[in-house]
Length: 259
Image 1 (cartoon, rainbow, N blue to C red):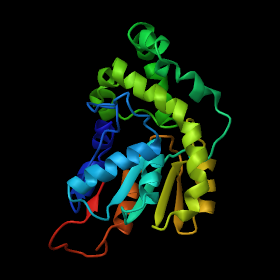
Image 2 (image 1 turned 120 degrees about the vertical axis):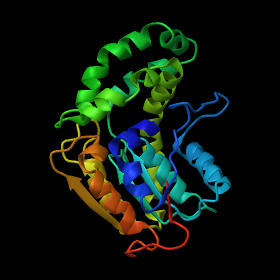
Image 3 (image 1 turned 135 degrees about the vertical axis):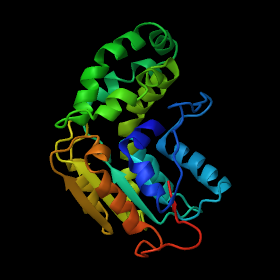
Image 4 (image 1 turned 30 degrees about the vertical axis):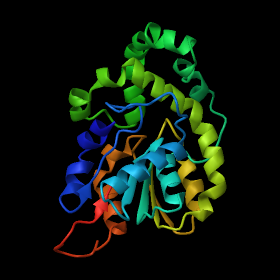
């Protein structure tokens, strides 16, 4: 959700020099996720391309974390919309055997999933959230600001549980589909991953770096999946390196765009 990036400090840090546009992906935060569409990474990229166009955002640097990295890649691959660069953080890019993703997709099932989301799923989610949060931030502790201000109740509503479950089911197929197109990415790419990530192994980012000739890889020591908190300055520097006029000491005129 947007609150995640705001609490990490990335938004304020980047907003000093750039126009920053943040999106909740469909079904997360206060956004809708209509059932009439299958919200694959490519479908979400199409939605964001239209939104960015309506906002007058041209040639943005696209920063994405975790599942969102696949959406960012799909946006970069989209014909008719150009991005200046990608900053991909803690992403999953190649299909592997992950039974945990399939187990988490239960609330997305028709009928049975609806019943689960309005009965047992919120209770189970409340119970496992503390351990899940520790796993996300491990090997570091959960930052006090996140612990005190992140809206857990918003994340555990039935609507968002369905969105999260659907994306658990879509993750491996999305990576399998997009991996065939990685070499078609023409913009420069910065890849960051925590070496101690217990959710998505750092080898995912190593493999992507090998597949993308124009990429740079930075593995963050003593950091887990939430490397956005562990190395906020490093991620901001990656955006700056790709943004237009990034070397200007004092920027004049319109601010470059970052999403």
